[in-house]
Image (cartoon, rainbow, N blue to C red; front, side, top):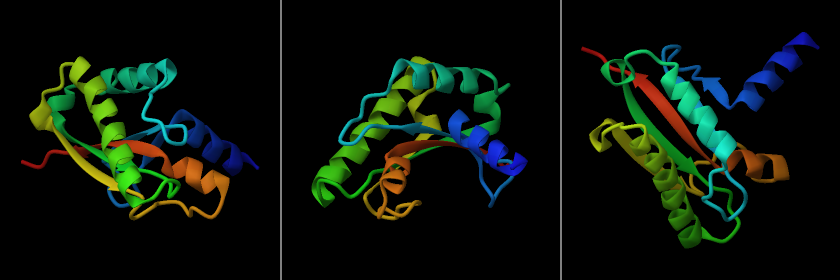
Length: 137
């Protein structure tokens, strides 16, 4: 039961750590269906998370990876994916993060991480992952 509480806490906080690279940091921004609007709470949480990382631009490269659910078709979801990553990128720019520190991959409805055969899976796929990859010198 304790493990379930920990998993729920990680999910609700929006922070996940990659299993592939333990030094990679990740925060997900979730969206309502068909929307690229980011609510004030998620903006604040992302801003606080970024502020909590010392020397962010000296240590990490930032990648935005955008996903959608399949509702609306391929063309609409590609556009929506691009709009979602643009919304997140604008938040990063407001934090004075230079454009050249940010790379973007808009998957649209391709390569979903969660299965789209349930409402929960579709809700989890409506997101932009902000991933901080450690710089290697």
